[in-house]
Length: 343
Image 1 (cartoon, rainbow, N blue to C red):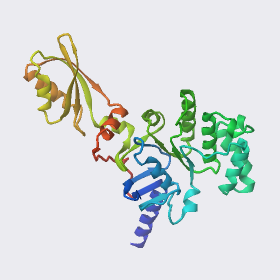
Image 2: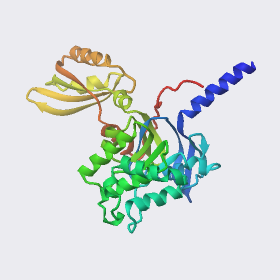
Image 3: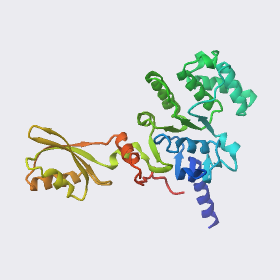
């Protein structure tokens, strides 16, 4: 029994090492206002996860707690196994944080600023030069290293902030709105940098721009009014609710009522009229399979409705996001991040 317990303990330890971020029932109150309410999630080693929500949803508050800048009202946060409240220095040594508005020093040259930040982050003197060189290279700011920070464009200031997050070579990067205020060319450059960094680091990326998540992330966490309302791989989120566009000959307008009478159909909305054809959008209830559309066609034919075509469509991330956050009471749907093996 002792050997079995030891093996189980070793497996649990290895499993815990794969979890770079662990958040359990995180709550943050500002007086009577609850900014974050019972949020729980995990981020595994090597993942790139988008933390998505409308402005004011609680994203930045959550990130500030994760990075140790704010204390939680209740709940637990562990970074690479270290509790951010009881072991803050060890936890913070495992992460690089890029806030939405980085507090750069405009009177310092880029390389001076990064050397200063490396010392604050306790990079050893013998490793400092190599650490700064590596950060300059990874963030793409080596060629402006002698430029005053105040003379840089906003895009390059964002790059310097990213170099700051990288200078201690942390395994985890937490980025808060990294492309805020940038022009399209600068956005593409920062996205490319993030994509490149994702090959060697775990990244948690906070944004309200959904194209940002689709361009850079494997998985999404959606927060609304301080609560986590959806989580899962992007491909899974899109596949969860199957949709189709159907064209029917429906002079007596029976199609919509017929489809709504089918248990597996969540919605049927008319989109257009093309001559004698009506074009409708069908959305199936969660967890339905594509074969459910066969029952839709069969029911329409029995009702005397002629079906010309049915085309499957995958919902856009924007559609899912809107459904979750546009109403005052967002649906409380939670989906597994992925199937982790039991310890």
